[in-house]
Length: 219
Image (cartoon, rainbow, N blue to C red; front, side):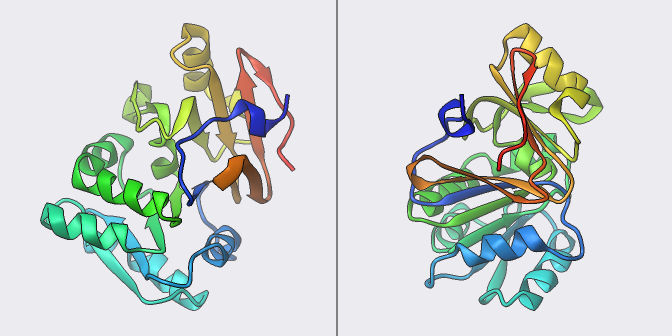
């Protein structure tokens, strides 16, 4: 069974890019940028301005269109919805714990993300931010909680050579809290696109476990 038949995610015209920790060569970021629409800028989500400084500079060096920071804690709901819905690309870096990020995304930010994705935006979620898009996610101290569920029936772990390395992922599968565990290795990204497209970017270190069976990498 191939990855494109195992993985199920929310419908939309956009791309969901789930990435490990970015490196200086920024290959995944460059590839994500190449999938953006011509219209709209790049929105950088965070809770303090410091969250986006490095990624905004890196994306500018890669030729990204005009970008803007969206503080999902302090800006009003309508502004958050509008700024995100109008973006051609939304970047969520892993600067905060999964707990804090999940809480901050609820409401207007999530509505804006969903609208942008449905209209064809690229959502680039890095490290901790990537894990939040599973139906189950790992919190600080190794606890688990309900995630956003964009990738159905899944737990996502990043920066691992194999999903088998994650005790949290194994525990989730054993408890049947989710049926799929996805591991995203160094300098790699799992990419989910319209029409059921599944791709692996960067070093392509992507592993999938179903009830304890670990798949090979996605080509």
